[in-house]
Length: 158
Length: 158
DNA sequence: CCTATCTCAGACAGACTGAAATAT
DNA sequence: CATATTTCAGTCTGTCTGAGATAG
Image 1 (cartoon, each protein chain N blue to C red):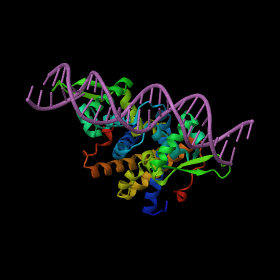
Image 2 (spheres, each protein chain N blue to C red):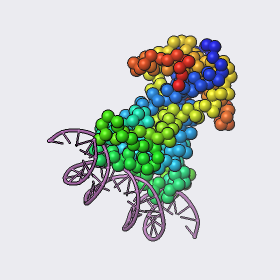
Image 3 (cartoon, rainbow over the protein chains, first blue to last red):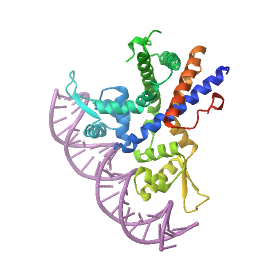
Image 4 (cartoon, chains in turn blue, yellow, green, cyan):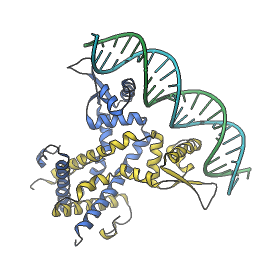
């Protein structure tokens, strides 16, 4: 491996790109069958990434009226992707969150990790270790740049 | 690093998951502004991943009528994400393909590699090398499992 | 005549709004 | 009374279909 640093960066990037295409391909069947409108899809993505939200918060993030946001949530609930619960602090508020089906769908879309998982366990020992080291370093870089919470040690991994 | 293989697999997977969430977060602004319906979005994903297609092929893949597929393509063309060209072999056929804007959107969605690129170049040398080795091994595993073309050597990356 | 696409007319669903009703 | 959400018209846009027109 005698390539320059710059070449290595380009190479890693191209691998990320290719693996991204594989993950995207794994998303296609679900995307085809998905019976959600774009507005509903957006709502599901917001709930999946941002956790439970009130109707008002959803309306604000999507820049639509509360009436419309309520309708969107209605449909997500009917489709089984979201559910409502009363807010204990203020019973006027309804907190909306993903169901397990909704969260699973979001995660499949966000990371496609089930797709990766199928290949990962068959890697050679030293390749797995290398991936371990490289991804962890990348993760820590992302955390640092985004000012996220201190990188948890390997032991606390999900 | 004294973890077992199984722990390492779980750890790598959790890192993929987290990085996937970061990439997903980077997709949100575009997703919010995206003025495409779900049917149009699906069509764009098909064109982006599968290359140029005729109206008939698109209709078949989406399991809709050719009339509807034609309308969907119309809108993608108006939105600037796709364009039509005559098929040289059979001038009855119209070949539809993504514009550069459409392809860029697809790739942003599929891999989110621009997001990764921002962090990659600042990794320490040995972490970058490790990522290089690990991702390449993973890529080769994917190629092997999917019976894809023989893994190109590092030099032919991209 | 056959095939690929486009055009047209019409049914239907979802998104969205603003105003009024309800609940806390 | 103020706030969060729902309900209630009503409009608009997009999807989809099938029949018929057009082109190769």
